[in-house]
Length: 219
Image (tube, rainbow, N blue to C red; front, side, top):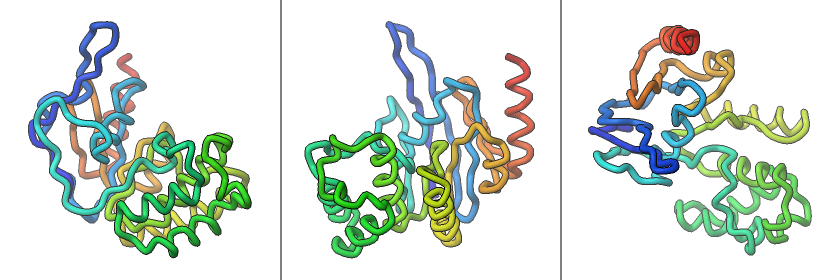
């Protein structure tokens, strides 16, 4: 369960305060995957980071019951001076999972070869994405947060990513941001529309997509 209680977060740019969410109250229960919809710049990625606990609200609170992932594919928090393996070891300790098992899984999954033991600062963006996705798949979460990226790399690697991701979702839920409504329909049961700081929940993903499409036509 994830519950927003009078949650408020503002973005501040050049002295202008814009609401991402404002006095939002909403409960997302386990057992349903959620598509998060909103126009460009509405704050969907920020909302995922709020759910993950990576950034703080300005007021109110978010109650989390269950283990929640970081946004899949997000590689910005890796320590560049540490190797990929050392970063994985650090995450294993934080989440209380078997260290050697996670190191072995990510090494096999990410296919980084000798770079796995090299500093992450030497990685290309694609290599960082492989490491991040493999690490995400190596830890069991109740909720997986997905910001556009469900697969990275060449065709074979993408196929492997999607296969393991769909296996994970048999026992877990997803909260997904995607510009592709087809992807949202494929993975999500219900939807939340983020519009001008308001979070509006729809029990049917089709209803959420229709409202979002109407909002976009009103631009």
